[in-house]
Image 1 (cartoon, rainbow, N blue to C red):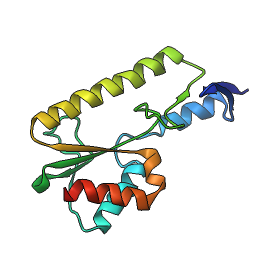
Image 2: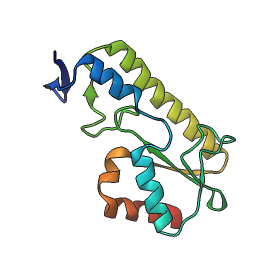
Image 3: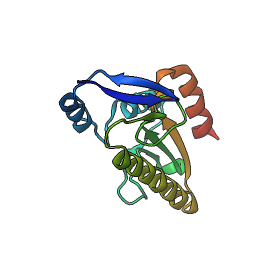
Length: 147
């Protein structure tokens, strides 16, 4: 059984059964994700040191550079509604749930960033799709951390 997805006006068929898709979704984590680990490895290799998921800051940011008063959040394109092809995917099943879930993530992200910035923190978001081009990502991170 296949499920159709609409991607930027195109219909795509899901290659997984509903049971397989459910299992895949259950394995998605909020911390220590593959994109987050890519960013952490890159930042560490550049010589920057950071704290992880500080509980005393809004949203428990992914990477916290305390001395620099800077934060890097690593967001999944689908779950945080990025404008790339991965963030534009609209699930064919349980549409209202996913619409509400994704939009609530966007609202929460904005609220957390506002709170952090009002507390004197500079905040950068790295999107999952950006972790596929390490040269570009390295330049972006260096500019942010050295400014």
